[in-house]
Length: 275
Image (cartoon, rainbow, N blue to C red; front, side, top):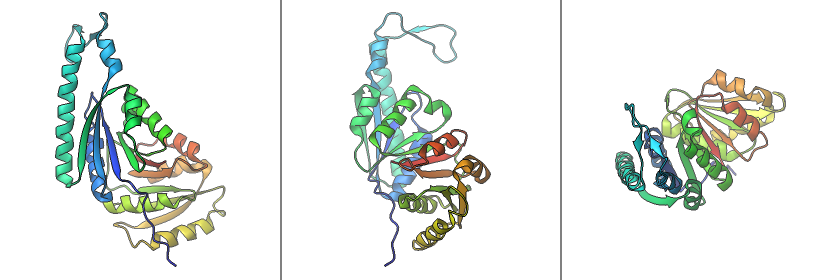
């Protein structure tokens, strides 16, 4: 019996919309992905109570852009700012959803950022986040990454400089979900597909390469060509730099997840990790 590949069931794509920047890159790509996977796009705007508490302190000051003086900050001003930011985020979400003709919803929550994000995540969700180093290392970015790991949900870090001509790269160590998701992304974005089969040696990867080719072949041809290559665990970073993919897919539950994450830190590509 032929084993038809199916991508993991992604029912909702959750975009945590940041106050400083309404996540335009993440939002547009998440909407496109939601259309391809027939998933709902959910925009979440969190009013961080820790910032509201800080605004109540008499010593708190802000530095407006293109200003040389400090400005005072109070809870009323912070709440007004949140209303403006959330309204802008909702408009951006509605525009993206209308363009891609997808189901969407928007919610505003108030609380501690990580706790509110965790409370919103459901089984079958994918978290989307713009993936510049600045955003990943911001307070909200760190919280989002920690929540994704704790909740074991899938995570899509979308690079600002999205280049549609570059291939989708699957880092394969036995998870057929990564193969199915890679095929889905290759078709959604119209990209070629490369599967990097991870093994202790290239010789050990030969049987896996044959199985991967057979598995991918059952789904029919994607929009671009398919390549399957062996890669040893020590050369993951080198292989990715040589390939320069647009999107990298791997399973965070795999044995080499730590080695993969370490290699990805120096790679400027979008990354979809299955949890």
